[in-house]
Amino acid sequence: MSQSLIFITGATGFIGSHVALQALEAGYKLRVSVRKEAQIDTLRSIFSSYADQIDFVVIPDLSKPGAFASALQDVAHVFHVASPMPGKGDDFEQGYLQPAVKGTTTLLDTAQGFSTIKRVVIVSSVLSLMPMGAVGATEPIIAKGKCPFPLRKPPINTPKEGLNPSLPVDPKMSFPDDPQTAAGLKYHASKILAHRATLEWAATHKPSFNIISLHPSFVFGRSLTQTSAGALDGSNGLLWAGLTGPRAGVPMVAVDVRDVAAAHIKALTVAVDSKDKVTEFILSASEREGWTWGGVAQFAKEKYAAVGVQVEAPYPPQHRLETTRAETLLGIKWRAMQDTVSAFLEQQLELQVKL
Image 1 (cartoon, one colour):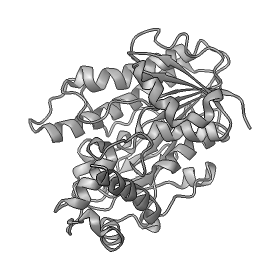
Image 2 (cartoon, rainbow, N blue to C red):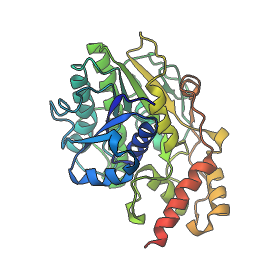
Image 3 (cartoon, one colour):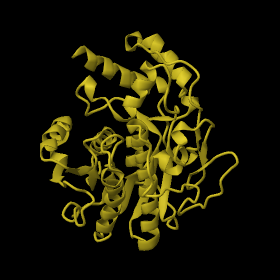
Image 4 (spheres, rainbow, N blue to C red):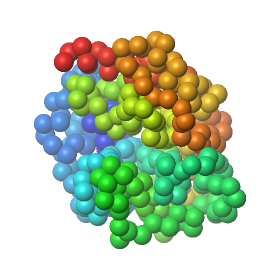
């Protein structure tokens, strides 16, 4: 049982709450940042069995210089999970870019001043390795490599590490008028730019601690924080909308939230190449675990008729993500689609009964 102290951002969210839970279960102590005092009681309730392992710090603005100065005292590891979600703001600069980019670099700047910190694990997204518009691509995308960058057909040549020239994103770019489309593209752009900022920061500052960047695909599963049917959002919201609508809107590249959380814990002890400024892992299950739109739809129809599955073919193209590094080095064994979908749908049906 480890008693090392982990500082975590984003524990009030879907992924972050699972990361926090698995860290507590593994015996780590946690210092959790929240933006509002009121969020502390919620998290205390969720993690009530681990009251002696957890403390809190209120940081209203993660992008503010010096925001983390007092939070990192005596910390051994950092989990940076907090990130703006699609639809949480209209202004790209203020709602997406500043929180995603400055929130990350401000944390890294501060961490460099603490000799106790051994590893900083940053949650990015597989979208940060894919060109803008990849979600709506009509051709399959293949992502692979040691430092995994995407390859289309024909392949795009990219460096092992550093900036990916195939992902041109202008921070001053304009977005479509449609709010839903614009929100998805703003989120995608912020992920690319935040990841780019992490790579640039590491190359420039050469920190004493290891930086590990995790790139999950669409993350599904039972939520620890959702309390009502109307509060369904994020990637789980996309899955529900896809199943209950006539057409699926996103590719079926998926990973269970519990597997993403497990990757964080394993990332703290995995052996890394000291020459790599940033060690990266794609996190995603595949068709091997049953993840196709047709397979998900059929399973949900047969086992959860109350959901009212409507989705029909044609489905979005099936992208392929190379996850050998995560499977080999982190030892991840991806949960089967049926396990993840059951955990998600059973919770949604339970919440609907409470309406």
